[in-house]
Amino acid sequence: MEEIKYEYVKTPLDYQITEYDCGTTTLLNALRYLFKRKEISPEVYKFIMQYTLDSTNEKGENCKGGTSIYALEFLANWLNDNAKSKQMPLMCEVLKHEEVAINSEKLKEHMNQGGIAILRVWQDCEHYVLLTKLDEEYGYVFDPYYLDIHQYDGDPDCEIIKDRPFEYNRKIKRSRFEEEGTKDFTLVKGKNQEMILIKKV
Image (tube, rainbow, N blue to C red):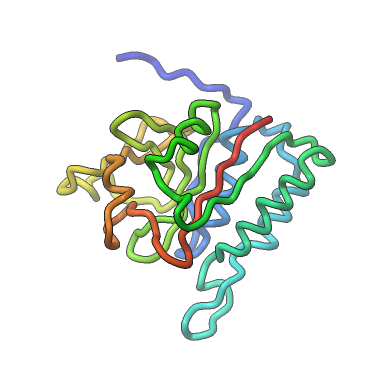
């Protein structure tokens, strides 16, 4: 079996610690994936923690609605504006509505240039995951929701991966992302349809 070698100046991608912080964790995972620890500004970390978990649930309980698309869009623009001053050379681009597609040429080109993407998908509810790799058949994502390794044993389109902690933990058929409905990892459609492209520059 081929040995997997990593840069241990980086940090493994992380899991959410509540039922609600998938957006927070996924945005921080994007930074973990792209940058070494010493390159990540603690001010950026603090800012992300401050502005995510901005939504209430249907009962009006603070933070239990998770992170809104508006908060992630605001943070993407803030990261762009402050990339130089925080010495974190990255660029974010927010895609909406018809631009959001796993089979788009724009996404393919972005991923081929070493970029990653935050996807808003279904997983019982609307949920954020990080797309780190794309090939002709599969998308490879890091899902911050920790699950039993047998969770998708009956699903031919999804597989849990346990040995790539710096890269991804789910292997998903590309066709699943584009399905209609609310199966796990189908892209959210409608007013909350969004994808954020991120890359180092």
